[in-house]
Length: 268
Image (cartoon, helix red, strand yellow):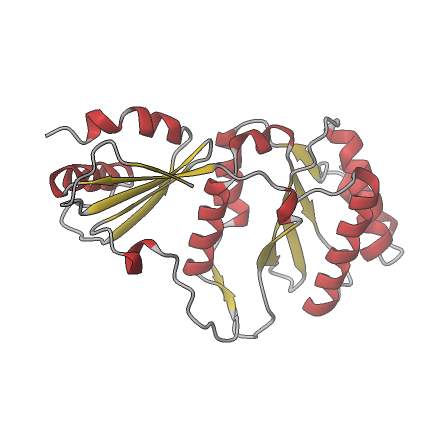
């Protein structure tokens, strides 16, 4: 992490944290450690994918270096007519991941578990494979690995995942653009659901040590500039200016552009 202090004096009151090469921007006012630090409360039994979980997931996506998405792929995994319980489903996913690692080598994957209307669990993933592979080829590899683990001997399970059945499509596709990432995450990965049964985590990141994160940059600003910056952040997120925050976070396609525009945004 780098601390830039071009506009710093003893009266600094606010702080910006942005991720150079990523999408996340955080602003805190005043710049107290209790506000800047990520909260780490003792959590109770996980009952679902809450709004707080969604916020943590979205921020993690913004912390990842955008170059990682250039050779990343969306993957969707589901079950046939007969499906297991949550514990078994997660064990299946772990076994599937190990099969993929044996095929492609170590790679990180962000996963999100979701409950379908029929009661079956399915998984939405962003796999940072770091290799170039055609969607059809990857769909066949993924479908084969998932069928071995979770297919239950149902041939239609494999055919569904390669897109060979009417109304189906391949289970894997290249990310392509940052706009597609945010669209996919908003539509599938970050949907908020509450469930009464405690079944553990609804999302996670496997192989985190193989993932490159954006460089974290911290900038301190005096009070007047922080007021302007807070107004900018609220306009960007379509939040009424009358709403008061001590900390505000958002994602931008180009957070570097935010850094280049900082002097203009914070001008009196």
